[in-house]
Amino acid sequence: MSRDPRTGKSPASAASASAQPTMGSRLAAEALGTFLLVFGLIGAALFSSHLADAQNAPTAGIVPVVAALAVGLSVIMGAYAFGPISGGHFNPAVTLGLAAAGRFAWKDALPYIIAQAVGGVVASSALVLIGLFGPAGWLTSAQDGGFASNGWGKLSPGGFDMPAAIIIEVIITALFLFVILGVTHAKRGTQFGGLVIGLSLTLFLLVAVPVDNASLNPARSLATAIYGGGDALSMLWVFIVFPIVGALLAGFSYRALFDNVQKR
Image 1: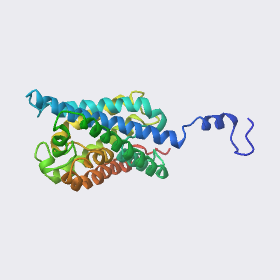
Image 2: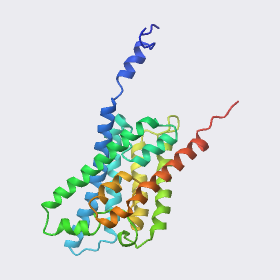
Image 3: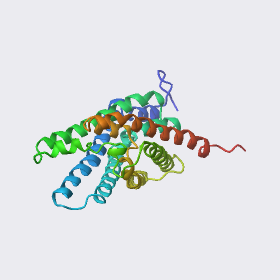
Image 4: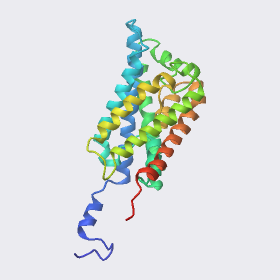
């Protein structure tokens, strides 16, 4: 088969390479996917909580379920809509965990993380804009309540302390990465990966929302903390550091445990 003298590649491989999404397209997909996730999750949590309060309905059991379903659906939609373009990370911890597992280039991690942060902040800003035209006092009440930010103590729905938040973020983010790495594996993966990932995230939110409002995602935590007040901002570092710790632990350990090649 003839090869291009300039690149050394065959025409077929060159055509395949040219068909790959550009970095700009990938970053746009990451920003839009993260927007979808944050807008769906935080919007559902804030608006459903207000509606339940307005109708004098109990909110303790409603909001975690609504939030978990919203984020699961958002991730499923984003995975199938934007995943074929960018890989569908929508989360800095996922990006770094995939890099640790050898599934993603380290050099591309920072642009992805910036795009994810921008998408998340734009989403929470859009919710604030909607709130400006909401019922009297809604936006002030939402911000005084932390704007669905992650936290412990007064920001924990169940009153859990900081060590609980640290432990659960490491565990659930690591488990989330194990699921992602398993269902997207080149040889052992499944075409229903997006569905499995979304459903797994629903489960993890059902477990973690009562503890610390469930981060697993530094971009999500940043997006809400900037509108959640001083307490949310002071606690933000935990929800940047420890989801990343969990993701890196999962990435490196998955590679060591399950991607070994048996020599004959």
